[in-house]
Image (cartoon, rainbow, N blue to C red; front, side):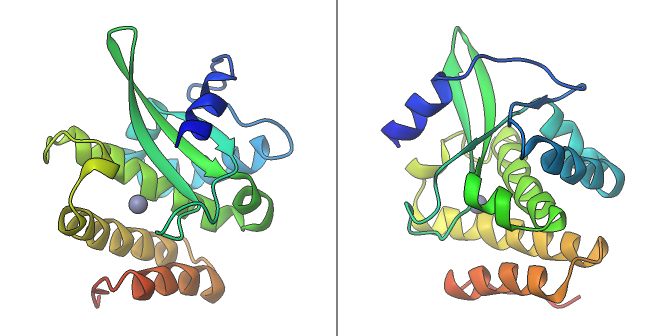
Length: 172
Ligand SMILES: [Zn+2]
């Protein structure tokens, strides 16, 4: 984690087009397209994303969750700053719709924490807490991918992670 925090602090903050998409070219436009999809199909969750700082970094393969993104709430200057970090390889290789799914996923974590489930940061939670949270979030992500007509490959990407994490897939 230490490396990631250093990476975050290396960037100055700037505000772009009403939200905080701090990703540079060539990823910036792709993130904007993904954000537009969320704004259209999940306006309530977009409200959470609007308040978050979106950044790119190298995180794939460094965690046991097979995650390509993560969210965190950073306490700094007497306030809490929500971050969404996306993996650079995912941003390069994934479709816009799959990236929208990743952003939605991380925004749901931020929203879930805001609801005061236990107020703890993700990685300090127990495994069973994370499983409950992820069952809800991955099913939401999968439904979103269906709703935006993401490809079978993109939907399978989500399902593969759910199976790996042994999460229940809801039928709907
Ligand atoms: Zn997650």
